Length: 112
Length: 117
Image 1: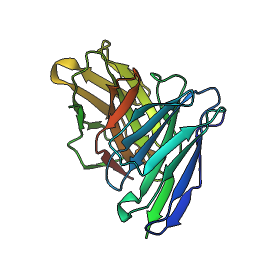
Image 2 (image 1 turned 45 degrees about the vertical axis):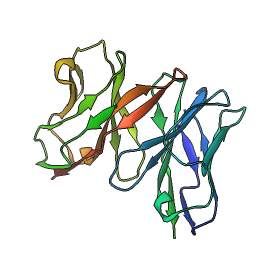
Image 3 (image 1 turned 180 degrees about the vertical axis):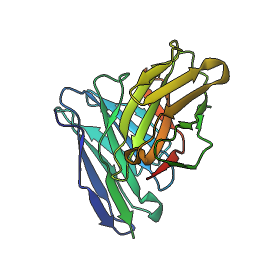
């Protein structure tokens, strides 16, 4: 079975632009979570979605938003990009909200 | 507040040596889960183990073993007879219950393991 997939792999944007990152969960998984990992740190929780509803939000500004689609795939949107948004964005899926989260390869975002 | 501490920033060992990665956590939850993930240079976090707070049995999987001690809030990870392919950053993580009834994961800062041939 395919694992979690994310697109694009890499992305370069300039300050002030917006970006959309995409994630497809493992087949049958209903929950998707997003994490931000800056260089040298552990991942930080951004959002969790389950059955298209937001079930958790981390300490990130309103410039960050996400949604989940009927097929359980998800998008993470970041508006008004800042240099500090440069990071690896990881998507994780789980069967149900309390099950183990399995991570995708991430999208590496560079903001210039 | 929930917190995971991995005090070892980087460890270097020679192939075939045993190595232990330390993880200490703080939590206010009575029920929680602990995890270890491996992050190779490709960036993907690879799940290794999940442990329930009520299950303090140690676990062994091949060359990997985990020691969970609730009394010291530690969940250490040992690799026996290390191999070059074990080189990666290893993260310990703790579940934190959210108001919605779901969990988010709190990660430590990771330990970079270098296994030299």
